[in-house]
Amino acid sequence: MIQRIQTVYLSLAVIASILLCCIPPMTFMTDEDAAEQKVYAMDFRHLHEMMYDANDNFVHAPNGAIMDTWALTVLAVAIGALCFVDIFLYRRRILQARLNVFTMICALGYYALLAMYAWFAVKRFDVDWYLEWTAVMPIIIVVLLFIATRRILADEALVRSADRLRR
Image (tube, rainbow, N blue to C red; front, side, top):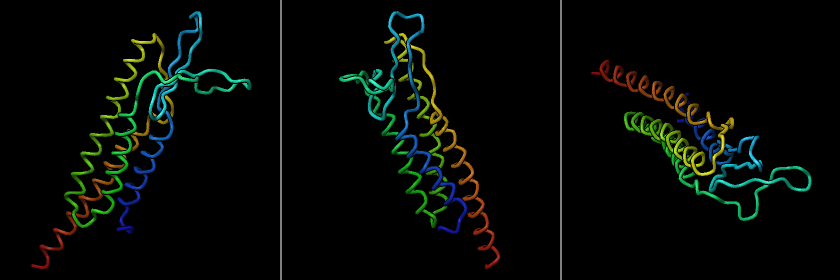
């Protein structure tokens, strides 16, 4: 199990999904020409209004939760959990490859959900959106899962060719 290279790829995908859960993928800001400059940050549960504290650092405004974004966190946790479970399915390679494909679809669905939240925020608050560096994590997860799936299918082909030689 641990000796297989796809275990490394799947472990990296788990780490990327943990980062996706912990660090916000997007921020929103009103136009600079607006009467009052407002900044909104997407947390793992809510879209929060941000404000400056006494040290000129951004902090969450009290009662600043504007919109729930828990579905993004649930999807990121599900992606990480599926990748983690996938590591231990090493004896059932076909199921492992199919689960990888399903997880890739979920990772791409994360972008659809993120775009939906961004569209709602732009329409509701008249803000511009800015992607953070963690917004690339679903693509990294898809690439890692694609490489792992290719390696899993290569292992399956190797096992089947060895079975043919034994008969």
